[in-house]
Image 1 (spheres, rainbow, N blue to C red):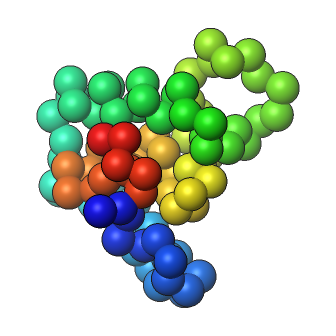
Image 2 (image 1 turned 45 degrees about the vertical axis):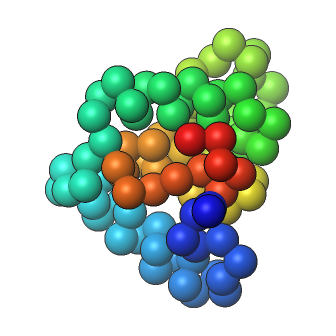
Length: 91
C-alpha cells in the first residue's frame, strides 16, 4: 500500500511526479470528479499536507503547489489520477 514513489530516490520520485503531471494535463487515467473531490477533502484535513503559502486559514482550498509531506506529491494533481493512492492508506 502507498504511493509508488515513496521510499525511492529523488530522481525516481521526480520522474514519477513528471509522469503524473503529464497524465493530469492529458486527461489520462483520470479519477471521476466525485472521487477526486473526496480525496482532496481527505488531504485538506491531513496533518501531512504542506502548504506552499504559509499562514493560510485551515479552511483555505488546497493550492496547486501544496504537497504531501509523506510522498512529496502535489496533492491537487495526485487526487486526479485514478491509479494513485495515499501513502498512508487514507484513500
